[in-house]
Length: 278
Image 1 (spheres, rainbow, N blue to C red):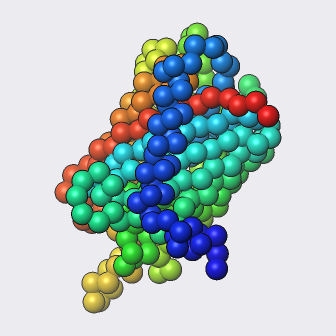
Image 2 (image 1 turned 30 degrees about the vertical axis):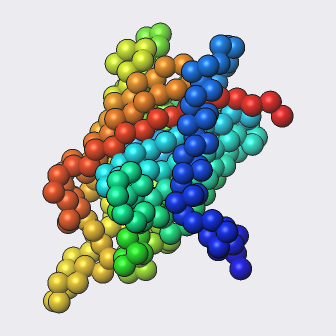
Image 3 (image 1 turned 45 degrees about the horizontal axis):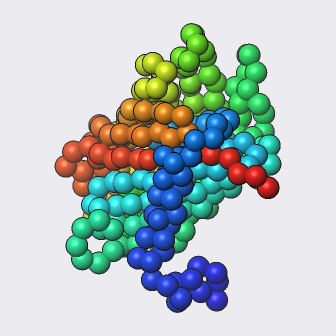
């Protein structure tokens, strides 16, 4: 019996989701009551869904609470183990907020990121890693998330500072997902940017080509597990960063790429970063 099956036998998915949510909220509450000065790098780990080359510095941790359509809640915890290596875990489900049965994710998510090259004046930072946590609802019939996980990935990020406190970050990534939907696996590409509006507000935008989420219907109109129409996923958001915490509002699938979409998805996130002594 694997570790995940053992946990499932001891406690229900609802307890897991609520427990991780409480942990994340405790970290966020610590920010409100803590008065001691801290120094954290606060490198963004993602734009919205697309990764960046950012990692947690050694002894730096993050606690994220993500709320998305259909009463969905996802909690992510991560920590920098060494100067170049960070790891994280996540779990969630839909209908957590609402009535009826909670539809939990198939399994917890695992994140590993390793900084291969540091950013220089002329070259981008390059990070490689693995992430099996997708976003949106887990579809048991199709064996996939609404928005697929990355799987194995590599990402390059370059930042341009044009004034004190103002930054323009450009990010590009490539990934291979062999974790979901056996009939629709393969390589994918994401590009995006984050642009400082002032010292607190950051504009976000990304485009996922969704190469691994589009199959032309066959003669029987079978799309083989794909949810996309071939337009790709265009997402945008606004981040409000204050010290060690930031709030993020997101609008996803602006182009209406998902076949079952009736409009763009709206989501909201709380992110907290701090350091621990060890």
